[in-house]
Length: 580
Image 1 (cartoon, rainbow, N blue to C red):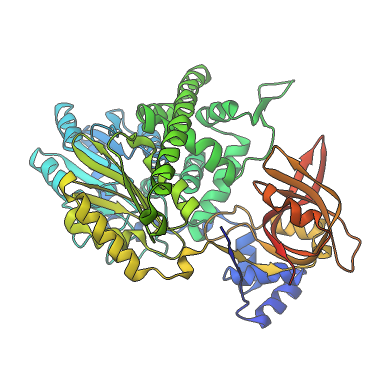
Image 2 (image 1 turned 60 degrees about the vertical axis):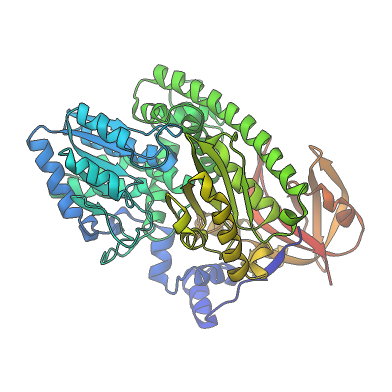
């Protein structure tokens, strides 16, 4: 699919000039800082050197004081507390975090993850009945609960209090909980509202420690859980999330919890030192590794079997047991990949065989036999293929349930909200949401959703866009440039890995197709002899262009290539086109 190239502009060239001078860096790097809202030397220092001292006061979150007071009452009275979380990465890491820190102060504690097939998303009456039978008097929900009005009222009838810690957008009204800890709720003046569910769990722990005048240091061991949730839940790596992610990655690389260590062992990026038992990674673990290596395996437990296994893995200190759990979860992931591939092919075939579906501005597909655990992944795959708002639905226990994904700048949550009259439940974010409805309402929902998308989406939104941070000459891309660029990490939403444009490039030597789908070649730029190695994944289609001898323009990111003990800079291609 043809992509639009959009070069970002610089708002204030004076700021770029001042940053270039005060930081003694390349003007291109100063432009990257200005684009990220960094306007002074002190702001650049905070960006390059994140500090845990800059974390916000957790008691600025509305109801945090009520939450801590109720938890302390429960501890003082010896009440049984249930830590409740969603079955995805964010939910399971959040449960593992809150369970771990509270376990240090209170023994009468357990955790609960709903069954995806039997209970569905969020808080279920089944779980409340279980809590009542287990003599639970306080439930702390994490990454869910903000719309669970009926369930929380049901719990209250049974004498069970709720503390809701959720980062999803609330509805018009809030449930009747003892405390609602959600920065997105009305009247909450917390200065940052993009925390993950696990991040909110961390703020709960931070508030608990602060109330008891306990040192902060023990909380640092929880940050590996937070960074995995930040990466997997695709929240912006800006502001407070940047600080939490920065120190979480440090923790993960230097002293990972046994659960993460065993997952990475099965991901082939872990090795042991020959001289001792110290953990040694084959490479530095970054956000991308969390997204593609750790996240899918934790998710697979809940998608294929029991998400409870993921929590057990994350709170376990025995390496032998974690390896057994990781082996099982890795098997779940292999099964998940098979189902994902099979259902994606079936869904693509449904579109291919239907001319109306092919021409539509949105995709809504329903099949009662698709596996509920992978439809979110399938929605993402189809959205990437056809690049339009996508809803994939299946049936579970007589109810249609599904996942939605969206393209840049189109709010899928608002689109689903516009169809709420036909839904039993929905929730989520701008670019990802979940929903459920009765089979008799499917056609009405489909029609309303299609009409909403047709009337609100623009043609530009339906064309994949590559945002280019800056145009460069490849002679600028030296080791010093890259050392500074590395300090922009961790990369992710809100702080993506910079993408550059270089024009009038020529291939030096003969390009090679590797692994059937990828290209490797070297480039020089018109007027320069500086040569760069290039890798273009999934772009063998561009072979004729790079072998033609004609000049072309390239959009790419700059990265290190480690091969046979040698480290060098290389260009990772995003797109190519002939020079004008």
